[in-house]
Image (cartoon, rainbow, N blue to C red; front, top):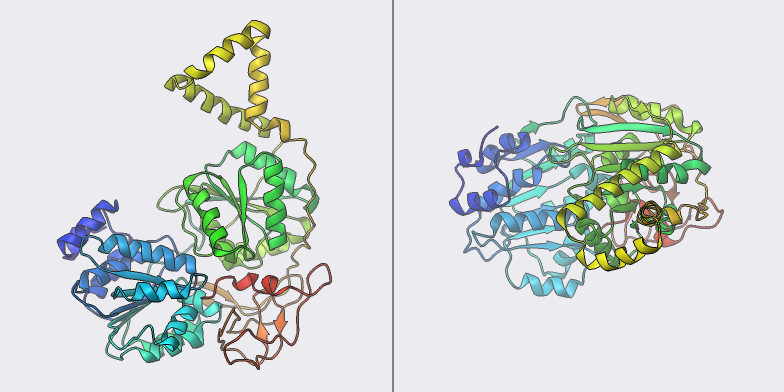
Length: 532
């Protein structure tokens, strides 16, 4: 691998890279940076966690004149979380040079964003919906844009942003450099590239095996009613540093997070009903270790990049192989090993086999952890922590009460009681009841071979979904490329899209949930939580 000093970067940019702890370039960086620095258009195929932000961020920051007072670079991202993360990395890369960048996304006060725009940032990082909002308000002009980056383009198209992206790119000067990054290369991505990129150079670092080799994958066959006890035993046995648990619905996430708290685990949930402030607060706690278990829906966790996640647990089997790969990819990052566990009910085994077939990875079957293994694991980690405090001599203020208790009670009994308290053993008997979720049912599916793997063209799940089309839905004026019906990833469809003037969509046909009532608007939005 090349060192960054071999790319001919400005000293201030090189200094920023060094202070960020980067030494050698990753494969995508080694291939993409020279092409980007030459000003050529680029299509980069790489999974998240491969360093692609720096692959386009380094040459971008290196190229921009710090005296520039116009928007000369635009980075589009599918979600607000990813936009924030990209903006943070761009800011770090450009801090010694003095580059000004700004993240633009929905959920944040637009007036605050307009005020920030007055500081004349050179780089805008944003989600398509909010970018269009600013463009329509004439608070962002793209007349001087020289560089455009589409990050996680396949995600943006899956979320129904095609029309928005096309509208934005048409407003950018034709004499520009455009770079497109995507994990997969389906037909709609290729069509977009043909339309807006000029003789692009193709760069791919997709491994032959879709699933990351540094992730130890296993599944446990378990009935729905046994899942929670299995989860508690697994957490006790494995003692994860940080763990993300995926649930299929917001109701599942809420119930699961509350149940874990009752059992003494430091856990919180993340889903579409939370406000942006609540989401930010949960993520802050997870990043700083205040909580060590995050329970999340698929889309709520999309774009998250938290270092140190040692375990991913699929409490509910994901609907499709891409979601499985995305979920487990939250661990095993930056060259570190990770562990992914998946709970599978007997009726979902065929669906698991389908995921194995598409990801081309055999997932090992493991038995349910025994109660003895769970107790042993929890006690072992607790004993290590106690001994660590003893060795550091950080317990002097507690010696007085210890001496008093030892005068009255047997030392073994005292330690045993302390261990029960520290391990949460006093909470293990708390009764917990979760609302059952219907198992996924595998169906006969058609799929075609793509260059990066296989993409399903048929639907799947318990409701007999039809073929997935381009398009999506959102909280404002999301466009789509499908027909008059409005499909969702989970197979349900909304009615005709005949209210396109900019307000909330008029849903002619409302899907029902497992309880037989109509979904609320917030429930309908869960599959595409973050729009703009």
